[in-house]
Amino acid sequence: MSLAFDLYLPQPSPLHRLDPRVKIVGLVLGTLALLSVHNFWVCLAWVGLNALLLAIARVSLARVLGMLRLMLPLSLMVALSWPIFYPEGTTILFSVWRITITAQAVWHGLALALRLNALAQLYFLLLFTTDQMMLVRSLVRLGLPFEWGLTLAIALRYIPTFAGTFQMIAEAQQARGLRLTQGPWVQRLRAYLPILIAMIITALRAVDHLARALEARALGAHPHRTAYKDLRFTNTDWITLLIGAFAAILFFYLRLTFNFGVHPIDLFS
Amino acid sequence: MLRTAHLTFAYSGSPILCDLSLTIQSGEWVALIGQNGSGKTTLVKHFNGLLKPTHGQVWVGERDTTTCSIADLAREVGYVFQNPDHQIHQSTVREEVACGLRWQGYPPAEQHERLTATLAQFRLTDYAHHPPAILGFGLRRKVALASVCALRPPVLILDEPTGGLDARSADDILTLVAQLNAHGHTILMISHDMRRVAEYARRCIVLQAGRIVRDAPPRDVFADAPLLQQAFLSPPPVTQLAHHLGQPGTPLTPEEFYQGYKRKDL
Image: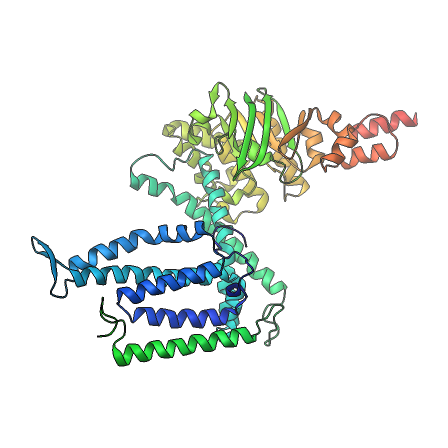
């Protein structure tokens, strides 16, 4: 799939070659670790680490900037609203009316905005470097029932198809005089109803046809399934997994024993 | 009625249509033929404003399409899409045919007059209260055509009107279109059905890689073997048979073939 809805771009990079299961485990551990820290420097270091990984994965600057642009409004909202609503610490920077802005809260807000970016980067990194079908395959190999995996794969596969159908239906209705861009917003919203109804009818028909096509190809006839393109752990995968596990154990040991990364500015508290 | 001047259209930098200039007169029946991806649908979408030219100009009558909305052009140019399910969304055939009239803001009395006339013209009166979504494919296509024709646009664009239809339904649809053409409607039809192109169209425009490679009556187009080969097209079976038998001329219908065969025999 090469449409805009698929973020995957094949590249000859070590991250692309890594087994998706290693990446999923890494993503889960990374998410847990990131959610447990509030320190500006740790979050900044993590963003730096992600930038390094994005470079290793040969993700183009345009895609990285696109990702940053997507995250910018939310990051700004978090960074600006946190000091206003959660004042903490004793160093007061300034006070206006009932609002007191403290240095610690500003650092905390910045840390959380960075954390949000670091988390998003991790997920984007997985999607940039992993083919959707192999991602689903890896979920099945990790224990997800095959039917669920297939449902997920079909859902992902049909996003661009339905986007195209939506466009086509919108054109067909406009060609009969439907105005989508005129009038107040309620009227404009109502104008989308004919498109949505035609979309639902078309989608139901597609679902029916797809179900028949899958049955015609004997889906579910054999309880034991094999895969044409299966996943195999290589030595690199094992080594990466071990390094990741060791780093995670070290991180959580420091976090739980020495409160590493809990304070917005100090590394240990 | 329809005119393009140096029409060029590019999508994401790749040219789809290259410097097309053509004029279609009122009352003509023009078939647009060419292999998949040759730019047929892209070209016709310019006539109702769904696409705007990257370079060049497109006129419907005296109106430049870049200055009109799609909804305004819908009164002039009716576009019947390839898949009727992309249009059908109402709970009855009657409402489906009427919705374009409602969107265009016709007064209720005129809506009623046009609706009744259109249902009768397309022999859909018996199905008026049926849900269109569950009708057979041929009937759904007829409903889609009727819902566009209810607006009585002087120009009718048909994208693959006979695709996926059996012979009877296909002839049924094209007979209705022929009646509209006889009443002065301009027909622009995209088709891969060469038998019906030969039978109904009076002018053929052959597109290849976004360029017009031939614009001539069907007989001249189907007689031009090198052109057809170049454009990946085949003439109607009856024409191919006549060529194989060495019959002079280019018969387009079984009747023409029979007349020629008789003459040769005599």
